[in-house]
Length: 119
Image (cartoon, rainbow, N blue to C red):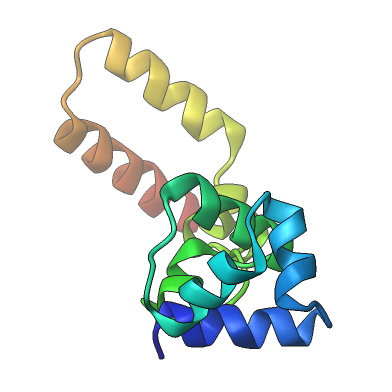
């Protein structure tokens, strides 16, 4: 699905006319029509405004993804993993970096600590 199709679907889902949407972003009804028919492409600022109005990502509007919502930080796997790490580990890693330990040595130390804590 291309940008024009997505724009039209989102506009209709919000119950907006082309004229109403145009007023929200300071464009004419004709300008919105040209975006929807692919005769004209929006600039980055206009894309950002559309994403804001429709509460979706620019990638979704451009058809790069079918995922409409902006992922929340809580749903991010990396964030979930970080939440489970003890603050002490993070402090230890900072101190080891300050003392010149390489990332590989730090990983090995953390693995050793985890292995000892399982016993």
